[in-house]
Length: 117
Image (cartoon, rainbow, N blue to C red; front, side):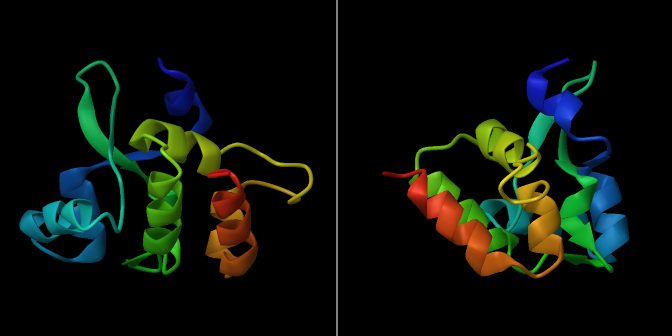
């Protein structure tokens, strides 16, 4: 099990994501292509999956796409950015993904941007 696999408690294979969002699987592939979400290959079968916390109330977490873009611009791989989002930060009072789910986008983006320098 990779480090990022152990940080994320629940992974959703892409068909499950489609079901939760009530969209066809092609739409999930579109979300991946436009980098609204990222997938990491996990488990014994190496299945592309996304962290369950990327979905909130039947939708992709609102501020996730912009945060993915900032971290990608900072040179993070998909696995590294998932790791960053799910690693607890004492100065933040928790994990960046939880702050994004609570609507604290500005603070998280500012921290993500500082990583690029």
